[in-house]
Length: 246
Image 1 (cartoon, rainbow, N blue to C red):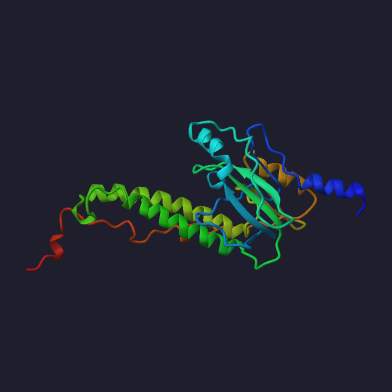
Image 2 (image 1 turned 90 degrees about the vertical axis):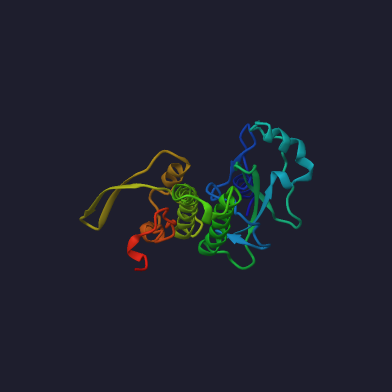
């Protein structure tokens, strides 16, 4: 590799952060912050990754305090790389629990597939959704009225549904970039041609870059995964007379 090629490669691997301090390298635009810390050596989409949360950086407490006070600007934060060589800052992203940085290097350990990554994400999200509402109950479940139980279950359902939808996306894509699109037309002539419509976003530019190449289309069957069954059943205030003893 000549000097020009090395410089071009270095430029591609150098994260460009915006004026507020955020940015992503290609392939990390949709990186989701896991509920639990990733195991050492975890590999996502071919890269070994390490996540550092702003509030875990002891040298950036003043930036974290400023963020908590409402400032979105974290441009002064210089996330320290993990020990060892070859780590590259791949993303600095926002999150409701605080900004975080993602470091990456070529994966050399066991690969965490999209399915395994989604399982860890889903487990943490489900536990968080359930315990969040359990902690807010003012009295035991059995003492609550039917309407109160329904309201609690509705909020749990909403949080769990969002977690499952995110996990389905991760599994379907195997942790690759995905985007939602409407299928406007499919024509069976000289092969199969289709017309897709998608909203504007970063993925649109990535799709444009793939023009002339190939992409993988995954058709999701979310309805089965999102079936709650009897999970939303509550204790009726008025017991059925049909079940009463004669």
